[in-house]
Length: 316
Image (tube, rainbow, N blue to C red; front, side):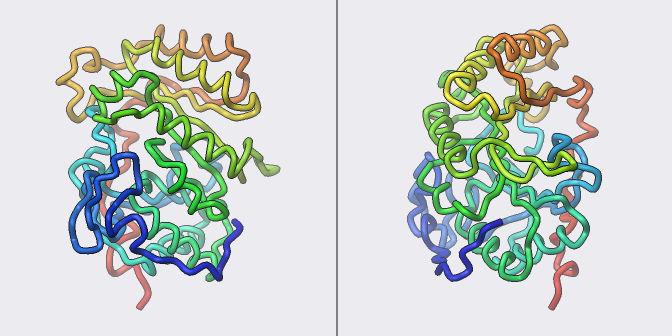
């Protein structure tokens, strides 16, 4: 991880009148106002622990050092992590504590630091990565995002993030509005992913097959939305290099408010998922990951219990 330790960081940037994400809500988070995402100025974390259920090149043999951030700038009706993303469970941490979380995970043997949904905390995350780098953080940093990002915000993270792991959710604005209340989702997300590619390029792996640097694009196949998944895959094939990896996820399960949308109130079928995989290959794409459909079992959802972020887990 390349870190400019001499860079002066202003924690109020993008938060005094928040324009950090496409919602540009303008809330003054430095004065206690909360953005549309629900977040105030300090980062809030619900869990920080080793996680074995990411892609094999991320989890490896010892686990990915996942840091689950609370709140979210999307409002997905089917969110598996709704307890933290929509309901806001978690604990606010200082920049110093966040840096210590990263270092503690590295000390536990994490192959990487996996920032899960950090989009709405760009400045605390940026400053914490710089501090942790100064104190010896050496494992790759993964930025695990819903892709509803602004390219200009991502540019402030250049040199601090080794791997970008965006979930490109929708091609259709109709679906983005209906299921995530995200106006213009694809236009923002596609430009953000091109910026991620510019920063880190195609994936590079170590001798054990663990990702060290690069772009890995996720896409969750939703029931009944196969045509939209095909449009997403077609864009990837046309706009991204063929050596970029795609994680085609079949883990959808109808949780949270999915029952309000009859078309989403069922699991993905094996036939739907197989057709998505066949289409992936028909486009000439070759590099990627697929899942067993039983990965949609809610048992795989982490328990959000403040592991790794309780006050007694920090040094004085």
